[in-house]
Image (cartoon, rainbow, N blue to C red):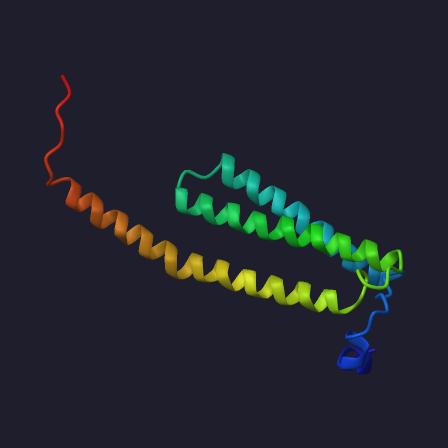
Length: 137
């Protein structure tokens, strides 16, 4: 099993991946779970969060999970139907690379950008309290 996992000639061929059996069902279940988690993340972000930075992060995580879940289900479908080009194994590697890159951008947003934006908002609020404002009649 592991000898074919690390064999580049097995990955970069147009032969569809074998998705019948237990391992195929597990992979398909992971893709479906990813899709459902994306829907839940978006619903929670839209209805339960008050902080707009946390809401934006939840929406981004939801978009990641929904997109990658749908793409994974499509890959599984094409592999199950034995479609040579769209069910090829290298799409799974591209899917995994895309997931990792997108997750890295999300982590960067969560750990670098959001604290910077929050600090900027605090600074603007401090500055705003000393500025004159319009008086309403």
